[in-house]
Amino acid sequence: MADSGIVFKADLYQMYQGAVAGGLRQEFDYGGHGDYEATLDLDKLAGREGLYLKLKAEHRFGGLQGSPPTGVILPSAIQTTLPGRTNDLMLTNVLFTQFLSEEFAFSFGKLDTFDGDQNEFASGRGKTQFSNVAFVVNPVLFRSVPYSTLGVTFTYLQEKQPIFNFTVMNSTYTAGTAGFDELFDQGASLIGEGRVPTNFGGKPGHQLLGVTWSSRSYASLGDDPRLGITPTGIPQQSGSWSVYWNADQYLVYDDGGCTGEARGWGVFGRAGYADGDTNPLEYFLSFGVGGNAMIRGREKDYFGIGWFQVGTSDDLNPITSTALNLGLQGQGIEMYYRIQATEHLQITPDIQILDPARQGIDDAYLVGVRALLSF
Image 1 (cartoon, rainbow, N blue to C red):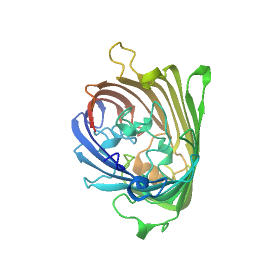
Image 2 (cartoon, rainbow, N blue to C red):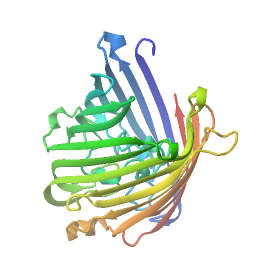
Image 3 (spheres, rainbow, N blue to C red):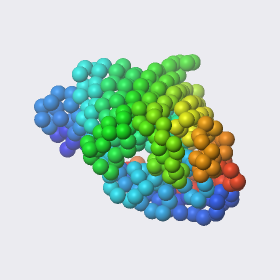
Image 4 (cartoon, helix red, strand yellow):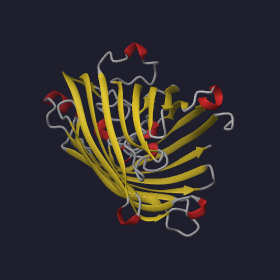
């Protein structure tokens, strides 16, 4: 099939996680997520040079929806709440990409935004690296950037790596529908993102800077599966924006020589600031360490340790702040070790200590184990 231009990938994610102390109550629950993705090379299939089609469907299942009952606003197991709060199978990508040259391409269709804000040690969609959404993408983006919707992206590449992306997309979440009836009905979102490779100390790294803006009129909070916030109304306000930065830098690096299997470990960091009038999250900081294990014989294992802090907006009206029970800030730590059990199976013990960023709720101590079966 690959020789004919069709590549199919699938994975099954499962998480068992619970609070052993703190939070709202101590209990464990199970949740999971399935991804099914096909990439079609339309040059091989239909003679359309440089044209590709990506199709992806996903669904969640189980009782764990984002986090155990801890009161946190950033889900500790983000894959268990995507692509929505129902168990329905949703088509989150129907994306055409046309390469105009080796340096320029544009994409159009339905896309999901979890492939943005890339970081070498803190991305992985919540499956292959960290589990908490704080270490997957910058959460200050969520207000102005929906998870899955219609849009178009223009990309500049160097050596097959995206250097700059500019995206215009519908401002509302439409993972469960085609989205055409709602296209720009509530405004548009614009995202510009540049990611430049670096070579400090002769070792690879990246610096990323992005800006988002949305013309949508915001009248409620909590309609986003990426945030653990109960829906509540706020006075209608137009427009929202955010700026964000992230960096990764290898400290130890081996390019793999003739095998081509690069490995190593290094540091990462993120920061973001957003419009406090419409966004419940006004600023965000994180940093940590991650990479391949340094244990002889376990070269394909992977680890990560990270800390984050999120500041909530003090510009929201008193009714909204009371309804959401927001404190001034929350923070957390996550530690994981990913065991490459077989070629297709990863097993990952995970520990998190979370300050929920809500008043009157104790720090939550979470333990869990996740498994990822992929083909």
